[in-house]
Length: 132
Image 1: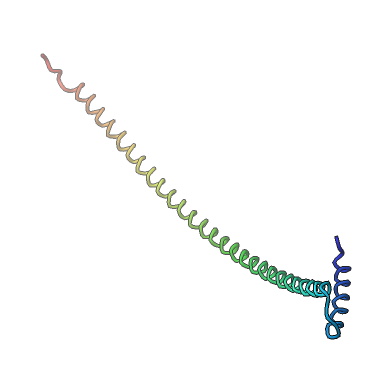
Image 2: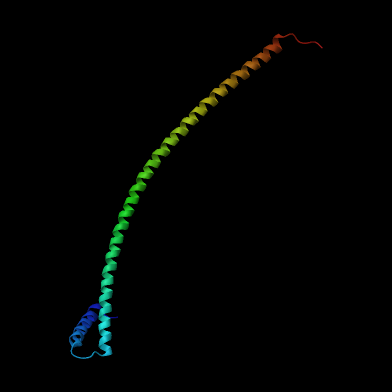
């Protein structure tokens, strides 16, 4: 609605006029309101500066914290990836050992089955037939 510069210039001029009158004569309600308005605008301006400064400090701190967290997470992810690689290697070794044991068992069971089968065939063939 108002241009801030126009309003500020008007308020500055009016408040200076009123301050000059302050010692000489009694102030009217309108003049007191103008002085209160000037005090409030000064107060808001200082609050705005403080708030902007605090927000900038907070923004810097958050940026630094986020960067530190990203670096820490990157390192932790790298360490986690190395740990996972080691675990996968261990699992691979376990599967290789298990596969070797299964292969040996299959060879053993196949040769045992062949030997028993050969023994049964030999027994049937070479033993005299039992007469009832």
